Length: 364
Image 1 (cartoon, one colour):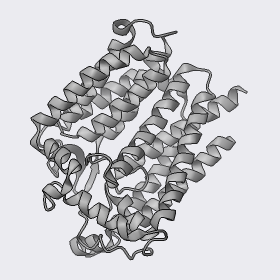
Image 2 (tube, one colour):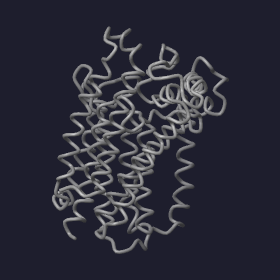
Image 3 (cartoon, helix red, strand yellow):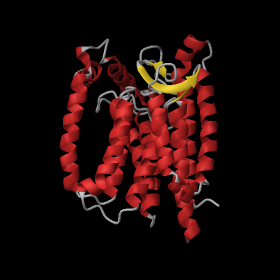
Image 4 (spheres, helix red, strand yellow):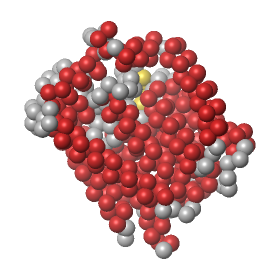
């Protein structure tokens, strides 16, 4: 039997998934009709992904965490192998300059999405066996090594945004494990230096930084997406222009059903619609935090924190990119953006949160 927290979480997930399918249908209608001669091409597929996601969420909500904890190492290394395999030409699918997918035809799976959950489980299991973090090299070297392995493989695809989200989620778990702040200050200095080197070494990343600082320097190139995103948000006003009335989806904003779907939402539903959507996201994050702090077993607590952090960081980065607060990263908006792997993995992770909440209730 599901607890009250599980029921609330389920309602919030269903609400966001339904909004996502509706917005994918609206934002992609023009592009899908032009490209596939079917205005609901993306909407039907997103609906199919949602059904698979609900099945996965239900299975994960009933999964035995004792079994999961025993197999975290296997799950992690299998996900690492998939990250290696996807880099091999002929196995991994090249799309938009990134070799990040497995698949046949237009049905693609992105292994980096599954890796995010795998590393959260593995690090949570590792830290749950430590009473307290006292020594940097003894207690934190291994988690940082795992971050380095995952980040390096994801960067080779290249998928800089997913690597950043994964690393940030693990750092939140380490902070929750009461690691001394001085460790993170030293690590932050090294990380910032490494990020600067990575940005400078890749021209397209440098172009994104420049377009973030001043998108009008290259309005038809690197700054095009963010300019068109702001042009979508501006006319929305308080109440929006109305459902399916967006102008920017008429070939102005590229592939509006993916990373920049929030811009179309803001245009059609306005400021009040955006406030309601953000409130729904915050409610789900709040439920995740409540589930995490109610746990007595460290593995459950760290896993719940990691999943909630992963979700919250993706929401924050995506919304920040759309409104021009962050450089373009390619991070999807959970439950709203079109994409099978992202939707299914995020719904599965919500199922794991429900399993954690149910475990607490069973013990009572």
